[in-house]
Length: 119
Image 1 (cartoon, rainbow, N blue to C red):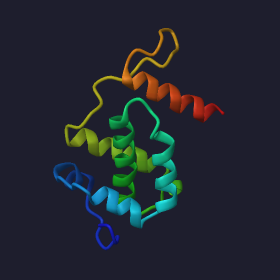
Image 2 (image 1 turned 30 degrees about the vertical axis):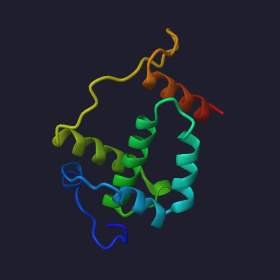
Image 3 (image 1 turned 90 degrees about the vertical axis):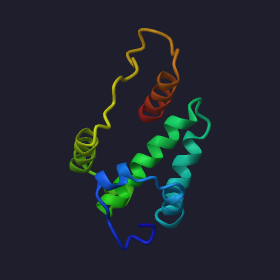
Image 4 (image 1 turned 90 degrees about the horizontal axis):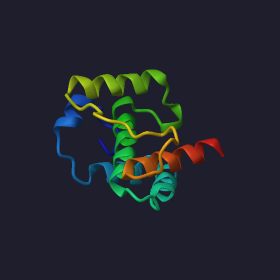
């Protein structure tokens, strides 16, 4: 996988414990882009969310064989469908309406991402 010699399915990736493989993949494939993303999210309050976001992008790159900037709506839809098919769904999303102050880890991360997207 690290050498992009095989492209497993999302189902296989979801069912496998690939400790260290995602980091090795990021060091070998698009290392500058992954390093920049890791640096940008490194200061966030919720490191586990930042790590999972990097893992999602890594899984998508492994399965599609595409570089991150080449992802399109179909790639995102395929990933979401695979998560649902493998009983890996998001059960709740944080309130990003701004109607209440950030009180949870997720809220702060989403707010920070939104601020970067708007700038």
